[in-house]
Length: 483
Image (cartoon, rainbow, N blue to C red):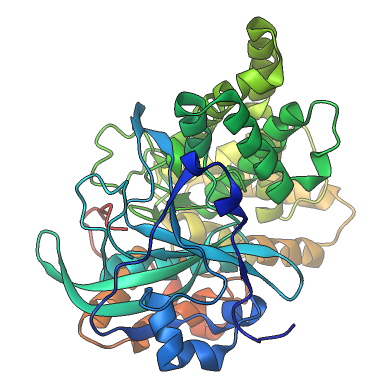
């Protein structure tokens, strides 16, 4: 099968019905396709011509249900800023799971598709700006090599939504390995039976970790596997300077993909206390806290699995604690490996962590641009930043080169490793806002050009130069939970 169109199944709908509610997307007045992710569509085995047709657009917005679809909203719970609550898809509807030509399975979800039983008083709709923002950021994450949900399309509805002001409505077609969250397991553990919890866990294992199905204690292996993927994911966030902004347990996917791009942004000036979200007033989800929060979230996940880990609760707790306590060291392993790549270091040496931390302390002290500092080191172009003129940096630079010269690989090989590890561009906040402001005026060229540049961040091409510059505005950048 190649580009024949929808090839939908919905294995999630075969779970116990406590986990979802079947319902149809709410129809919209006059849908209009704004952006279609053609490379993603092709990889899913979808026919681009069909998607761009009138029928295809009706499907992307939820007015028409593709053959094989079984629309539903998923139930889940979550700790939001540390407080546990019942949640669920309040404006998203899972259409089905696309089976690709390579027999992979991906959720197709419509975000902004109308009121669901979990809407909690919301209107079930989404505004165009936040949906385009998720499209831009999620595709940038994919380009950076960070596991992420992706965006297939954004379609306007022809109807307004009302937030602080009147805004154009839109639907985002989101693609994910699945939408099973830590919060899904919290929901099962709190409101489901033991058997329903076991069914959910076996389903998640079959879908995301089939290699552990025959393990003696597959649920122990499941906890370890989820933790391993999360450690690798959060390390990639930190290495790229990404601040998620709302690391609630319902926003941690079992698959190890980045999910939900509400108040997220990328850091310009290196500062571990960086917070962009307007609602994170105490810095719970600050850049430097993300590894600790991931560890906390995984502890909540482990709690849901206790009945499956061992019949004796005390022994189950000991097993869970033993696994979760390994997270800091596992995260550190992935982070150090990535940082060595950013500095062109092939082998592991005991002094590497202190070398890295010394650089980061200097970057923080002299308010250096995170991405551009590593980019400058990659091409040995150390000028233009206050950091590079300091005595501390001169001493560090000498130690770094001494370390480079000790390894068997040449300086040229080290530079090649650095070019693959240090992006030329990230979705600079002012560039994203520029694209969204143009889109609001009906000009999508700015956004399309930005997406094109961000799709190959390690190209280090001439056209990327202007997109690598940080904002010259002195005001702090603030994001909002619009998605």
